[in-house]
Length: 464
Image 1 (cartoon, rainbow, N blue to C red):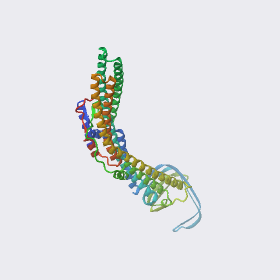
Image 2 (image 1 turned 45 degrees about the vertical axis):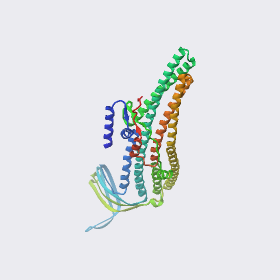
Image 3 (image 1 turned 135 degrees about the vertical axis):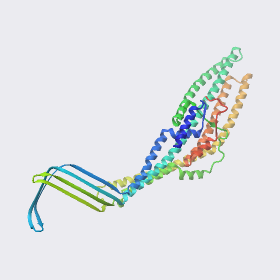
Image 4 (image 1 turned 90 degrees about the vertical axis):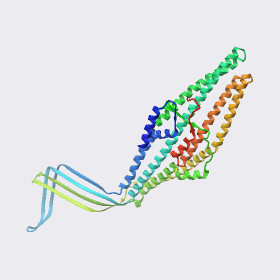
């Protein structure tokens, strides 16, 4: 309920905020918890999974059933060759008894109770249900981490789309200015017509790229809005700061150990293996007998008229005792089920081993991306400075006639690409940090807050 109130207040605050709202990453995550449909489905699955724990306990509790019937019934009985004896009447042989009720009134009731005492199959089933509940908890934890990663990815998708559009618009302005300058120079005979053609071609190409970038930004904003429930056009995520680089990372062996023990997918696989083992245990020969404490009480009554006049019969019964059930022969069905369950258990073990290999490889890739990423960011920062210096020199050379308009446009394009590459590298570095934590099963809101602290608003930039 508290998280829901936070989401409602967040939406209300955004609606009342100005159009250039700097969306916080943690705010986006909290809003996504209330609006993401995939996460809602995972929440419902988790609630359903909790009921399996109760089902497992209920298998060993007493069960009571009550039955009752009422209706019309006919009954005819004939007995011959009976022996009859009664005090004072002596004994008679060859006695016949005939009773008859035609379309009489029939009623009966019965109460039965059963308390399981021993059952290998029931024991395995109860363990399966408990494991299924544990599996639901693990799936819920995995869904929470998955939502966090999806939020981060969509958040950074909007960041990159906004910066791509901003850079393209800056390029468009620079190209338009270069086109005007080339046309003026051509008019006064200071430059060839080729400069004008080159600037015109680049201007039209940039216009097409701007239109595509505007469409891409709108789609990325809608995707983030669908996840968070926030108005798409008013959201402008923060960008990675210059301090986004991670300087220290724990050793790879430690991360591999953490992933092997804490990764949600591996823990779910291990639970699935145990569920498969219990399924096989249900059909073992030792699990087939069952012993129950049973109790029954009932009464049957039939009354009406028959061939010999009015008649009625009433019978009551009650018992308490133990019942042993041992399957003797099932035509091979039970043994076939056991063989099938053994095969599925072996499949589950193989899938777990494969998942361990995959998770280890993913952990290694995320660790390398994180450790190498800081150096990559530093290199791209130096490349951006060099591209800007080259652009300044080319612009000066173009003014004095040593560089062509095409040289200037290429330098502008290279500087813009270097800026976007640096932004992508910084976002990738932060994403790899969270992905590594997710692989180890330790991704939580404090981790997200640590990444959020390395973001900054676009205070010095114009939002597209």
